[in-house]
Length: 408
Image (cartoon, rainbow, N blue to C red; front, side, top):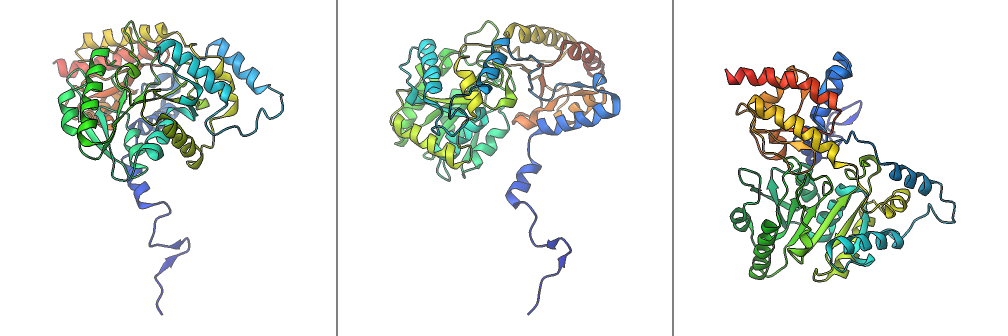
């Protein structure tokens, strides 16, 4: 009997982690890669001398009423306040969310249409990973897109179908129609958008709804419209339409990471259109998926806190001012940038074809951005302006020095 040679650490025939995960990590988020590079540069040059636009980590602190609600929820002493609750969330919290949604959308939302989730990422995994997809089912993603969408779809054997948006990053309905096939199960939209900041107008969403309605009838099963909306309340004088009015088979996933400046607290919700066929079955499935994916339930303290905070937001005017300063300066330097209608990102065209190389040029000026290839749209870069004003002001000379090389 022969034995395979082993090292002191054990067998050499398999890596410590799965091969699939190792491959995914190699192609993983450029955002995190650049964030980690920023950590290295800050240690080398001093934090105040590195201008980090890599991560969408809000610089604005939570409003005072958010802090008070969190303290009150943590101090709750009634019996069972910190025990398990129904997997979909506290009934009173779901009712508060539904009441708010009914008031702002006009749709007849009830608590039974809401599932509390562990941030928007957790909610999207509940919706895409377990509730909607069978292995081999397809999800249409619109490029540029948040890169983690690819992994959310893949987690349960789904297949991502990438569809390009137009020159101004708006919906290309012909391209979407061409991508729909017999295995299409959902399309995922994100407005205001990460990484471009564009907002899809109501007429585009109405047209998308009509397209999906016709396509669903043609292929013989409903196509879900999943809308990821953590930036809804960070908009600059433009309407962010509610998609429920455009298409009955809509599932909204959102979080309070951006509107309440609570990304570390991981709290959000899934809201299923009351008009969705089989809505109760879908919510039951999402509740089961919440438990079996290991979330079990959204955090109790955060649930109780946000119940009283529906409709409260940070002051979007602060981000609007940052956008105007940075967008105005970059465009005057020769960068081509679609002006965002919301969120807190710019997505300029790279001044050279190789966006990774261009990002490295900026990095030499201690400016950290993320190459567009990380969002499925090479030739661009993402600049996150949810930073301190002085970061923007001190970075502008470096942006200009790089741009001058191309102006010449």
